[in-house]
Image 1 (tube, rainbow, N blue to C red):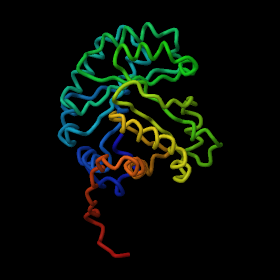
Image 2 (cartoon, helix red, strand yellow):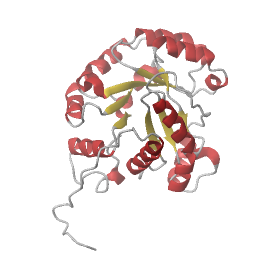
Image 3 (cartoon, one colour):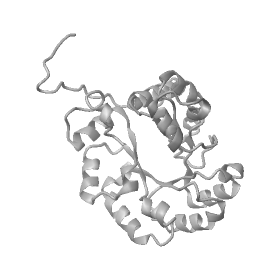
Length: 277
């Protein structure tokens, strides 16, 4: 996601082409969740333009197609998988981790399926699995063994801060009905942990809720890991700014952590006069 309407004119140019929006987003953050690939596999030509707009150290965490993970539940999905891997090839090293998000109905009884699926995937990529069945969190050992055998990461979706108190806005009420209530997990299995964090539309509460992650991520960095953290809020209006704030808080604890890129200044629309007020 790099083209939210509310970001245009603030974090991104407006008007702007899709390529200009991605290039501008990459000036704010050095990683992005690829949610669009869940709904449809893009053309190889489209993905090639993504590579052209980002540096080699930019991280795409791309979600596997819905037909693979939710409709066919990892069974008999060879053809859509082939199309997906062919399409994303132009990204090269930018395809940081491929994200296997599974439905809430995918539980411990499906571990054999998951194990077989992970072993069948191409070796040239790294994989992360997001699970939404609470039983995995109650007894994580078998799942961790399956993931470790495949060198795959367990991607937590931390919604604990969001669900701590009732919603206070339309966006929060909508998310209250749609987002999963996931147990907290802060353990990493690989050298590339990934965290998805959902805060509130109130910035103060979002920042309060991520403090545990600041310490966890700083610890991972000291261990030599290379974590990726995505900060969400129900409306996501301030997400790029919040991501940079989170990064700064971690960097204060790990001074050797490189800073994020400097966003390019946005030019006003051609029909908008310059003003000091």
